[in-house]
Length: 303
Image (cartoon, rainbow, N blue to C red; front, side, top):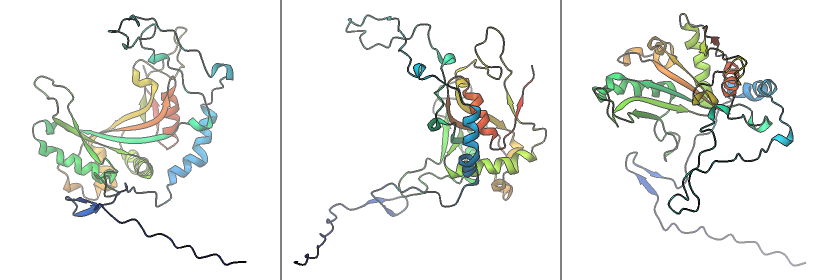
């Protein structure tokens, strides 16, 4: 039996184009987008997969018969003549106008269990309307809280970091379009859960007269199609986003700020948004059930 000839691997292809060079960092830019992956176990993420996800599916499960999974398309009243070439591609609204308040939830399956997608911190600084330099304290505080920087975790721009919020339209005597008015930062993955752990262990317990995140007044009655704990009076009520605000004195309770509080000109109030994948009627209830599983309290607002 003849011996097989040893295979000779071919030579690597020659580099005909030089790597891109980042003039800001004085380093070459690799051809791939580098991203920072999880390097330590996350306690809250393990808690979600081990306990919270099963409980959420049990509490929020709604049985949908197979015959109702695919409903026929709703008839659309044609407002524009499709044979007319000038109005052929115009959008025809459904009968009855916008139906966001009657948007049905997605079928309950193991694949679409309510989960947390992102946490966003938003800070509004009115002083920035008079001078842009007053926004430096806000940016420094958000960077300390989140640890996010522009283009972090790689040479390419893989992270958005702290973003400046600008005015969208002009309001006479107050703000102009494009004027910086605040800053925001969006967290995903393990840093998002680390922020929640710091919020529930250090910030919320030290707030005075904080009973929990206020919930809207229940809407119930024979003419209401919503459950007793729902209040879908605006489009955001059918989206799984939980938002609440913290006073300026709460910023001093964050360990990242408390250790060097004198480095910031003043304390700022903030809004924290928990963005989930829940949509449709009852999305707020499913999102509150998820957020409350991370030890964030809620309180019913009285009439």
